[in-house]
Image (cartoon, rainbow, N blue to C red):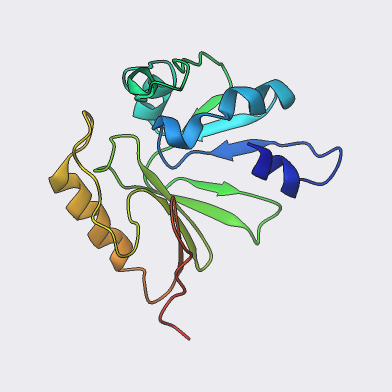
Amino acid sequence: MDAILKVLPPKSILKGVFLTHTHIDHIYGLKELLNLFPNCLVYTSDFGTKALGSSKINLSKYHENIEDFELQINNVCKLCDGDSIELFGENYVLTVLQTPGHDESCLTYRMGNVLFTGDSYIPGLKTVTTFPHSNKKNADISIMRILRLLNECDIYPGHGEIVKSFKD
């Protein structure tokens, strides 16, 4: 949360947060962020909306040092595969790819030659599919979708280093 606030200019208005998936390690600062920016929209998948409201689904219930995370808000925007959202004008369009596997809520976002993959694809690591709402077959399909874009896009995974595309 502090890292996000550090990069925002003073008196900024945060209009939206795009969730790559709804595991607690990716959403734990969301309540605090929404307290600071109550009109901020939260973009997630249909399953992600369920996970935001359930400490079992978002796995916060199973972490000793984390308070159960349950969020009931009206400003959630459900995204589907192929949706496009215009950001900062027509030159910045974010396109949604549903990439379930690591979790049913997983989304990957493409903007130009950049892919935000969350935990659907972390270069050099196997995708974890041992959680309650994981699915190895779906993860394999999602990874193949992402790998097809490696020559065109830089990868910004949910953990680890940014990986530059092979286009250079």
